[in-house]
Length: 112
Image: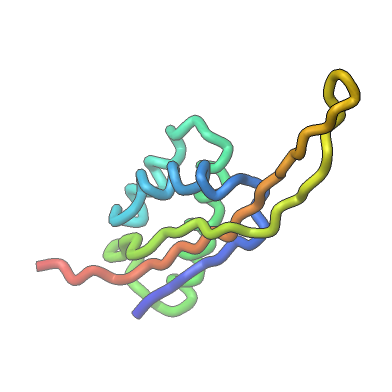
């Protein structure tokens, strides 16, 4: 049985979100939640909210919260907000504000 949570249009670039997701990949859900508190990045706060949502979804399905682990955690690219930034000598440079879609998939691990 699986539980998942998806946050779409998160105002953080997918590259920065993937750095945090790589830290918690494969961890037990409770340990990952604890670990995210000490990661000093904006994307860690966002990922923490998605993980809490996935845990709440798992609880609604009647899953055992102590056996949950992070099976899959991905950050896909969302839409990009593009505009032009004025620079010196009449030039302009493109500015890209990236968004991402963050997905966390939890699964129960059978203890041996």
